[in-house]
Image (cartoon, rainbow, N blue to C red; front, side, top):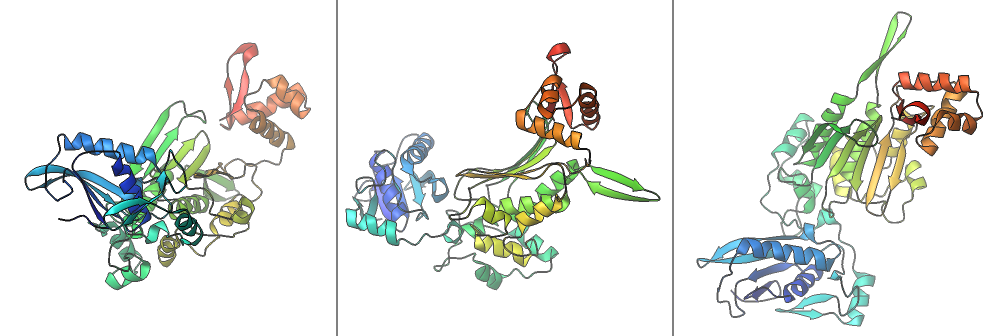
Amino acid sequence: MLEDETTEFKAEYSDSIVRSAVAFLNTRGGVIYVGIADDGTVCGVDDPDGLTRKIVQELTDNIRPDVMRFMRAGPEEIDGKAVVKIVIMEGTEKPFYLRKLGICSKGVYVRRGPASVQISDSALMKMIRDEAPLRYESAASIYQDLTFNQTASVFEEYNVAFGEPQKKTLGFFTDSGEYTNLAFVLSDQNDQGTKMAAYDSRFKEEIVLKDETYGSVLKQLNDILNYVRSLNRITTKITGLAHEDTRMYPEMAVREAVVNALVHRDYSIDGPILVSFIGRNLTVTSLGGLPLRIGMDDLLMGISSPRNPKLAGVFQRLGFIEAHGTGIPRIMTCYKDQIFQPRIDCTDNTFRITLPPSDFRTSNPAVREVMAYLARNGPSARDEIENGIGASRSKTTNVLNLLISSGIVETVGEGRSTKYRLV
């Protein structure tokens, strides 16, 4: 074994491991062995499990952007001795740099033969200017021992071919034949899952029912929809001799929100999708803010810039997506003329859709005004609501009683300290 552009030896742990990891991320990836001397002699390490945890912590604390999805570390036995092997993939968000130094030539390293060296100012500027961003889904996966039983089952169910030619066409392989991150998120081994929970109120005071799912994102889609369906109660509207059954949350809106979270989430960030019943609302939260140069108004107009176009292509081939950019408008259409409207909240790293229940309809302006007041101001006393909407005490009391009986409003406190809040 010899050191080269993609292999480095360390007899023991040192801070230089962080610099080497940055260099591999900025070049072609590589492997660091801790417990092997520079000349290839295996000397081993004490407590390889503890050393592995320490190395992972050091790399995640001291390198930016986040490196978790680009590395794998663990003990390995070579020549009868324990070493720690750290596999680093080429990163997709170059330049990677030392957190304490920032993006400057002193903080950015690259590989030159068997050495990790600081990048020059001109080379750094060229990397920033010219480095075409490699989409995460197209980069080689850190995991290569993958199976696709769950995905194959879904393709078979929808009568869509799923052989080696189709995998190549869909983007399961890099040019060198390695599995991509797209393959990983569609594999049985995908550990980026979804957590689901139902809370008794919008203040998350108690969990009523929780569940979680992992594996292929196609399996997760089915598991999430089944979970939501189990809590999405049916209401019946009777008109004459006819009756109409509807769900509390429009099934089309639920499906679009879940598909949007699975297809457009940033899989380079480690963490689960969250599906939560909070009070009377259903929220779907995924990692990754809006794509570059796309605003909220663009989304509502149906303009789309998919973060994971190949994954979107898989969903489209199976018929789970009709066309790019239709999801959000379809959700809003489900709530046409409703009192409560879906809400979209977005930060730099998260995207959340909140679906309100659609089982309460009224043309009474006083009811609308009371609900709007509580939505704006939070828990409020009856006289505060009266003054806020300019209504009489009797009218306000009647409206509040109606909303309480409908399960939309609840009381907090007793006597003169009683306040009303949306559930």
